[in-house]
Image (cartoon, rainbow, N blue to C red; front, top):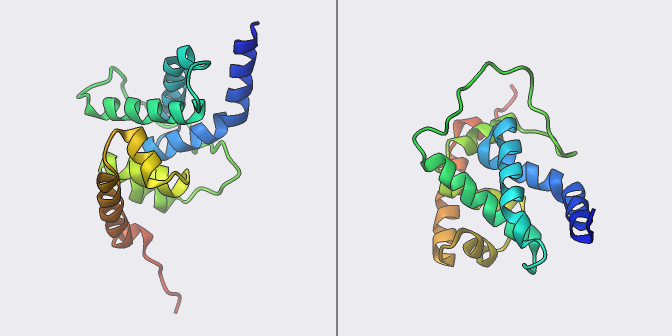
Length: 160
């Protein structure tokens, strides 16, 4: 194994769970999240030694791949019955209502919310990754937060 391959393996071992979490929040499905991470890593591998921040580059490839997937009318896969609950590849608890509310957002808004509030990227970094203006990131975030704020899935129920 070459040094680059070993370094890539180390990167995937260290950052794979975080990349999977981002993919899962984008797709809302554990299997598609795994596919998205694998696809993004395969696409990004040739640039491993050429880009300054490989993780940022992989995230951008993930978002672009995710966008191209939902633009397609059919991706060649047929759904099957679920075999069990979602497996979470991080220590963070899963909020099923939050995931359902995120799934109701348009894909662009969902991408901005995930990158901003779950990955902690700045508006400028998101704009670069999505190839949009900072103003677009701000307006997408504003619309998404308004929708999430009014989502019945996220309303706090008072106990009598």
